[in-house]
Figure 1 (spheres, one colour):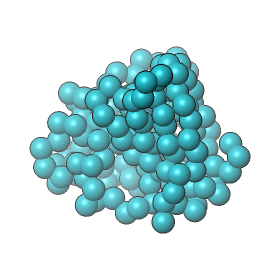
Figure 2: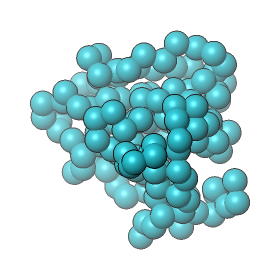
Figure 3: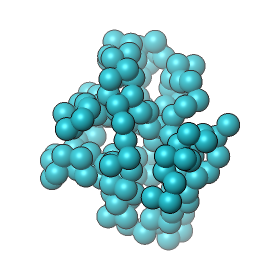
Length: 151
């Protein structure tokens, strides 16, 4: 059963990137991170923070039109999916998600497009726009809660 592990108020883009960077050293191959939020909520910015924390100052474009960008991190490959434009749930297999789920770290924007393919062990970052910035809820199961601890 998933629950909120951490809630953070994000005042700007740098704070959103810092939250992504916070998670980077805690990741292992086969981890799946779901990024949820409305358009403009900061999903790609969060992913950019995580990827730059792993690889340094690299260009991290939004995969909105390509649906997928991959990055070679030191211990695993990062697969950054943006499924906003995905037509059918099963189309995700053509993007190589099976390999990504086994060997890489998956960052999945718009995971609602493939709800039927997820198993409930993913960590979810829920980004909500509010009057003074954004609120991020980090949601996961007991395994994620134990791993993240007081980080």
